[in-house]
Image (cartoon, rainbow, N blue to C red; front, side, top):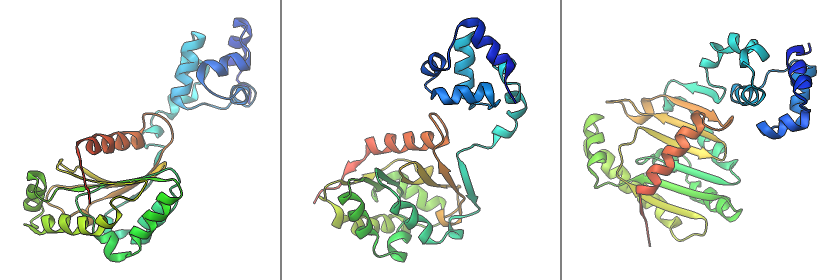
Length: 246
């Protein structure tokens, strides 16, 4: 079904598919599909196009108004799990194995990875050798926030000892090209396991151990979405971290 309103606006304004496409950073074929097939662009693109053309976005694409409620569920959300314990470790390993450009891990300890998959360090070495940047941020066992998390989860000094154990697991990777290990003392709101444009995010719930808290699987869908929010959070924590040296 053709978008006659959009066609008329383009014709009256002397716009070509190419000129509009260059203004909104899309392929001219996308604009052609908007006009000839009635395709509806992503909202952020539609808003930019409407502003460029001096038109009301809902006049050009009425479907966007009806789609607003459906967008309450992020297009970046692949899956939600009730608790981390529902995911086999292979889910995390398989995700990290797909990385070609970057791996980012933000945790306090997460020693379950090494305990269930002893080849984790080997996997990270292989990824780094193939040009993947690997950044691991683990909790500073001596930080106040780690100590407090142990009290909140009724885990006592156990979480501090697990942070130290995590450091022992990762220490053999120190000094390897492409791999950086840092410790951080921030309040950990979420554990993040990122591989390129996908992430597993383990939300933390007050008084609940991480294995009993929810996990959402995200896949990046564009600028400024949920994925980018967590990626930015990782970078902020990373900037506060202390590099682990030999």
